[in-house]
Length: 190
Image (tube, rainbow, N blue to C red):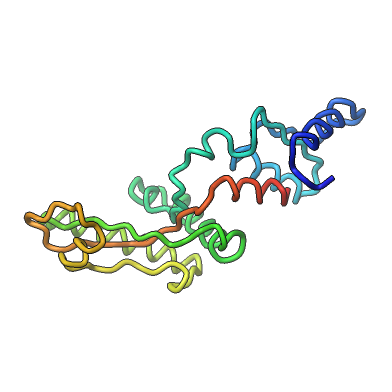
């Protein structure tokens, strides 16, 4: 039986409770972390059982920001290793694992003349783009940062405060189209 449904769940739980030999790894929780652990263990040749009280992606995974970020938030705290890993994972998701489930999303930060803040934002966006390039993500999959005129910022963000607006900076990250579909795809692969 390959269909994931209530009957399959009942049958699989019955097999799990009746089996004489233990599984190597029991994963509790069918969110993105749980299914990722199950996939990792299965690819290492371990026997795996994943149990979830509700449905795949029921909890936190269902309420995610849907942002597949490349580590910019980790760069801000100085954690370059995790920032690089995030960029690498985003690359794999957007180019091989789930390009059908992730699209580029442009993020815009308006510039109101605070030179130090503007320089910091632009430096952060350039560092994030360096991570994108280091991961090998092509610009046609994930465009790099760019400077925007005030007119461009207003066109993209019509409700932005216009008084004092000098322009803006933008960068691009990945956005999940459907986070539950990604969790289900990973679970099926595991």
